[in-house]
Every structure is written in structure tokens, then in C-alpha cells.
Image (cartoon, rainbow, N blue to C red; front, top):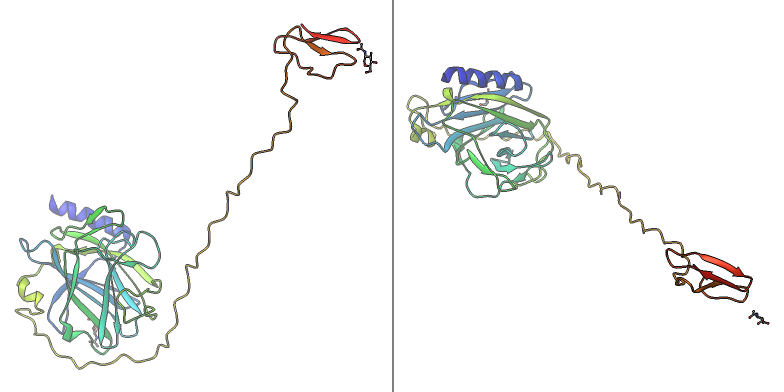
Length: 299
Ligand SMILES: *[C@@H]1O[C@H](CO)[C@@H](O)[C@H](O)[C@H]1NC(C)=O
Ligand SMILES: *[C@@H]1O[C@H](CO)[C@@H](O)[C@H](O)[C@H]1NC(C)=O
């Protein structure tokens, strides 16, 4: 039953994207992940989960991208919109990161509500000669709240989750030192099936300290600064504000054409005659009847 359900989900994810997570052991720490690498950018995202019965609100994540990359981000719920996002990039010797949420396509705003917390771990192993790597403990990242107050969540105790990634291979965020900086629009993105079942690891408390029983201890890598090849190119100003078309210009109501005098002559009153200059409209139900040249009467 459970396997059937998982297979169905995997089939569903296959429809979204053929990509599925695979096992990956981070050589510098020995931490094991279920991970997906985007082929052309060589960016990757991996997850390690507590064993069954462990905390249901924690995971260890790892984002890595080339030293020349602009930024890399992941969506915990798969799609860009209304899912908790994590963006990260290298700035000097450190990795800058921020949680974000967006209800619309455009620069995702930082997520400012209480709850999810990203804590960097294994910070001494953030780079090798080709990539930066950001390893973090995510606490309460499985639930978030939309701007309209609606709660959202993913189930970290489940077997499977569709997740997403996006990034830019060269353009850094506008203000790379600021976690909440605007980021240039992603150059690549996709969704993939993350196998939670295979991502569970033992020794969770040790993992959170970046230690594995069988793997290596964190190594203090000598930092290699990235080649300073990229003169900064500001992101294209994609969203210049266009005021909405002024569709509703006010049209004043037509000025009524001046109507005839609104006087009426009661029945049997005078309504005409050669010297008569008064009202000529007979009251409703009567009409002006000429009796002679000098006198007409409403009858
Ligand atoms: C550097 O780290 C990345 C991410 O873990 C890995 O894919 C890559 O093979 C590593 N490069 C070297 C030269 O070890
Ligand atoms: C109509 O008016 C003229 C000029 O004021 C007057 O001479 C004439 O007598 C009047 N006729 C009647 C029938 O009142």
C-alpha cells in the first residue's frame, strides 16, 4: 500500500520532471544526502532527514553551486509561488542566505514571519576548488504562512516530496552582502522528486553537529577565493512599473435638452386664442380645443 502510494507520487513527479534525487555523500564531512544536481549549472540540493520517530520539524539541507555562480535557491514545496524558498550565494568568505516567499512571479520577498529557522552547520567546509557549499539545519521549515494568513506545510515524515530549485549561473544579487537583497531572475529552474524515505539517517544529533559516526570530521579547508572574473552586471530591470491603462475616463451624463415649460392647464381652462400668451399644455386626459380665433379651451 505504502509502496503503491510512493510509486504513484514518483510517477506524478516524473510527469513534472524526470529528475529524481540520488544518494550523495559530501566528501568533506561524510554527511549523506538525497541530492539532485542540475546538469548544466552543476548546482545541487540535498536533504538528510531524521530517522523514523525523530523530530518531525527538522532537516539538514545542502546547497552547492559553482564559485562563479550568481545564486542558488530551492523551493521546499516544489513550485515558486506560495512555497517557502531558500536562496543562497557566496559573498567573499561567507555564504549569504535568506528565506523567501512570493505570491507572484518576480523578486521573492524575504519571509519575515516567525517559525522557520536556518542555522548554518559545517561552516568550515563551505568551499572546495570549484564549488561553494552551504550546509544548514532547517528547523520548522516544513510549515509557513502565506501573505493572506493561510498556513502551508510539507510532511517531513512522509516518503516523498516534490521540491524545486532555481538559480543564476553568473549574476549575483544586487546587494550581495544583504540577505534580503533583490536577486536577478533565475536562469534555470525545475522541480524534482525528493526521496524522503531514502534521506533518513541515523545519529541525528551528531549529524546536526556536522559529525557522522562513519564519516570524516569537518575539515578546516583553506579558503580559496573565487576568481574575480565577473564584473558585476546589474540585473535587467524587468519590472518597470506600467500604470494600468486609464480605462474609465468619466463621462458626464448627457445634459438634458431643455424641456418644454412644465406648466399645465387644467381641464376647461384657456389654452389658446389670438391674444392669449399663457400656458398651452392641457392637463393629462384633456386636449386643447379651439372654439374661435380668440379662445381655445382644454376639454
Ligand atoms: C566540490 O564540491 C562539489 C559539491 O559538493 C562537488 O560536486 C565537486 O565535485 C567538488 N569538486 C572537487 C574538485 O572536489
Ligand atoms: C387683442 O389685443 C389687441 C391689442 O392689444 C386689442 O386691440 C384687441 O382688442 C384684443 N382683442 C381681444 C379680443 O381681446
